[in-house]
Structures are given as C-alpha cells and as structure tokens.
Amino acid sequence: MQLILNAIASAAVLAPAAIGFTLIFTLFRYTNFAAGALMTAGAFAAWQMNDLGLPIWLGGICAVAFASGLLMLSDRVVFEPLRGRSGGTLLLVSIALSVIIDNVIRFAYGTQIRAFDLPLRPPLTYAGLRFTPETLSVIGISVVATLAVGALLAFTRLGRALRAVADNPSLSSIRGLPVPRIEAAGILLAGALFGLSGTLAGLDLAIEPNLSWALTIPVIAAAIVGGLGSPLGAALGAVIIGLAEELTVAFISAPYKGAVGFVVIALVLLLRPQGLLGRAVERK
Amino acid sequence: MDAYLVAILTTAAIYVILALALNMQFGLTGLMNFGVVGFYGLGAYSSGIMTETLGQPIVMGMLAAMIVGGTAGALVSLLSIRLSGDFLAIVTLGFAETMRLAFNNEDWLTRGPRGFLIMTRPVLEGLGRDATAWFILGVFLLVAAVVFVVFNRLAGSPFGRVLRSIREDDLVPATLGKNVLAYRLKAFVLGSSVMALAGSLYAHYVQTVTPDNFTTQVAVLVWMSLIVGGAGNMKGAVLGALVVTAIYEGTRFLAPLMEFLTPTQVSALRFIIIGTLLIVVVRFRPEGLLPERIVARPAARDPAPG
Image (cartoon, rainbow over all chains, first blue to last red; front, side):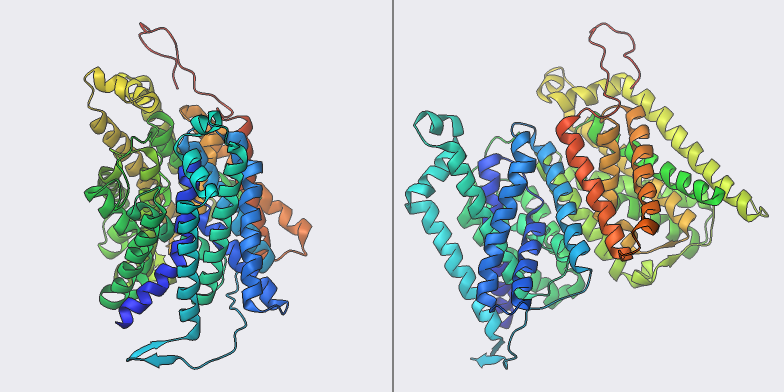
C-alpha cells in the first residue's frame, strides 16, 4: 500500500507535465525535450518567490505564470520561425533550448540543492500508511489540475477548438477558427502545466539544476506510454511510470529509478507502439 | 602553451571522430542519435575494463570497445528503427542516461563516481612527456584520418547513396528492393562502434574516466559540430568539430577576463553560448558551413565525394 501511495505521488508530479508535453506534440508535431528544463525553471521560480517570503501557494502560481511565459517566449523566438521544418530539427532545437535554460539556471543559482521553506510537520499516519502533508497536497493539486484540464479539453469551446486545430489546422482555419490564437492558448496552457509540475517536483523532491534531465525522460515516457496525443493517456502513463519507478526502488535498486523511463519506453515501443490509449497514426 | 595546443588538438581529434560517426547515422541516413555519450562512454569503460581489469593490450581494448559499442547500437536501434525518427531520439537519449546510471552504480565494474583509473596508454615505452603527448596526438589523428577516409568512401559508394535515399524518403529505396531496415541498422551500428572507439581513445588519453564525463552536454557538442559543419558532408563534420572545439576551448580564455564569475558560471556560460549558436545555425544556415553536395546526374559513375 505504501508503495502505491508513493507511486501515486510520483505520478502526481509527472502527470501535468506529461499532459503539457502531449498538448504541444499534438498541436505542433514535435517532441519538446525542453519539458524538464521548463519544469526546473518553474521550480526555481517558485523557490525564488518562496525565498522572498511569499507563501508556497503564491510561489506556485508565480511558477505557473513564469513557465507559461517562458514557453511562450521560447516559442515566439525559437520555434515559430521554424514551423514546417522536420520534427527532427525541432527536436534538436528543443534540446539546445533545454541546455540553454539549464545553464541559465546554473549560472544564476549555482549547483546547490535547494528546498522550499516549509513548516516542519510530523508525518501523518493513517491505516498504517505514512505520508507527509506535502505528499497529500501534491496529489490533491495534481488530481484537481489534471481533471480541470481534461474537462477543459473535453467540454469547453476552447478545448474543442484546441482539439480541432491539433487535428487539422488548415481545415479549422477555413471553418473560421482563429488558429494562431488557439495555438497560443495551447502553448500557455502547456507552459502552465510544466510550471505546475515543476512546483510539485520541488515539493516532492529537491530543487536543483540537474533536475531537468531526471524529469524529461519520465515525462516523455509517460506521454508515450499513454499514447501521444491523448491527455487522459498521459495521466494514466504517469501512474504507470510512477508505479514502475517505485517497484524498481523497492525490488531492484534505488539508483536505477532513472532508468525506468527508458525501459518502459522500450517495452511500449516493442509491444504497442501506439501507446495504451493512442490511435495508430501514420507518423513521419 | 605548446602543450596546451597539443591537448586541444587531441580533444579536437576525438570530436572529429564522434562527429564523423554521427554523420554516418544522422547526416547520411537521417537517424537521430542523441545517445552519442552512451556509446562513447560504453567504449571508454569497455576498453578500460579490457586493459586494466583483464590486462589485455590496448588494441584489444579498442576492439572490445568497438564490438560492445556496435552490439549496443544494434540492440538500441532494433527497438525503434522501424518507427519514426523521434522515437529513436528518445530511446537513444534514455539509453545514454541509463548507461550513465550504470557507470555510476556498478562500482564493482566501473569503480563508480570515484573514477576508473586507466594506466595503459597508446604510446611506445620510454618517451619523454612532450614526446608522449605528441605521439598520442599522432595516433588520434591517424585514427581520425582512417575513419574519415573510410566513411568518405562509403558516403560516395552505392551503400552511401542508398543511405541518402533512405534519409530523403524510405519508400523509394524500399520500392527498388533495398532492405531499408538492414541499411539503417548497418549505418547505426557502424556509427555506434566508431563512437565507442572514440570513447576508448578518450579513456586511454585522460586515464581517469568518471560517469560525469558522459553527460548529454557532450552529445550536444557533437551535434553542434555536425550541424555547424554541414550534416551529410564528411568534410563538413571534420570542419564543424574543429570549429566547435575552437569555440569551446577558446571560451576558456575568456575566464580570466571575467574573474567575478565562479567556475560554475563560466562553464554554464559556455554552454549557453553553444546552445544559442546551435539554434542560430539551425535557423539561418541549416545546411551548415560545408553543405552536402549531391550530383544531380542520375548516371554519374561516382558522385562528388562527400
């Protein structure tokens, strides 16, 4: 049971970012490797605000806004001029972007490990489970955010428009949808999700520049396991990755937690390349 | 100063070999390998284990590196080579991170973060310090030259032409009866084993390898070399590796000018510069300094080299 709780906590950190990643992928058809870097940037933004004396929830909101703006900025400066180039080119550029963001953080904050300034509270015990209040809030916030984004995509006008643009931008444009504005909304939403995940990662783990690569691979793995393009799948994928990570820690060896993403991706690609909830699509 | 120049050239030779290997995979065949450091590190450790733990001569170490690197390349590429390029990129990146974890944690084999000491060097006995450095440089340049000549020949050969056609559109060669999967696999294995060879050379040159030598940042430098030089052109790969080494090592001289920065900040700044340059090149000169030249005549007996 403890193991499942831990797995859900890991999943809670990954899920929003995995949804953000899959959103970007469906809108623009490229793999954004800067996901981890954006999350780390979010975590640092939250930490900075927290360090200035703001409460953590306010720091989290700042992180969401900051990551959202950062993704928007990087899209305008870096990705937008390259629209229409091959997915491989954009992927390479996103790695370069990730290196830049990581090193800007390293430049500004050094390599020291940081943590939020939280009041020390004793861990709670309930039905033989031990957990900290932070774990509980991480899970709660993540579930609420995931459901909210899911509802947004499924039921609102913006959600329908986003799905239409992701499916076929030129057709949506003909039907009178303001495609650039909808794309911008998608970018802001994805950035906000990265920022949220980053803050949660900061609550659950530690905040350091090296977080970036440690987060990118599980996030992408979660999105792939769930089936690229499916937000619900991404959330489910996050749970599977979280579970696999905890099982690895419990039964194999803790340091190899980082390899889980890779192994799971490999298995999925071997057994079910379209992911759990994805449709088999012609990808090029 | 002289010794420093020799050291830079030696490093440059390693980057030249890595860039050539990546050019075989990405430049010619379009395979996105972001796990360059995985194969590079695997080669370094395989070679070290062969010469130190098992006490074999250095040639055996280099051979072991190439075999292990090639085998790993085959396994990694088989996972995803049938799917689109993005998946290969993700799998190779995951592979590299996993290898680094393994180097870090399998203490019994790699001595973990404390570093693997390698005493064997690719030199003759009894040379002085300067002569040794020059000798190593000579060996590395020789290997780089051999790799260049072989790969350049391959690129111009029918084999290279099939690889290019796979890169452009894999349906065409498939329709012509070429086994696309086998060609991709060959190109990937060839590149991976040469990356591992570069790792072996590196290990015997620096003599201490730690998992930190094999982070993704190194892969970014190799990618930068290829993109700046001109993907698809073997000469471009060489030029790119030299340019990137010059930029990377050249920025070292900026450090004394900026004494107010800590070493961490200087190192971060260098990578910010490298990353920015990479994006700028992709945007404004995607074909690189030496663009690939393809002879349009279909009946050309021998297309322009490179």
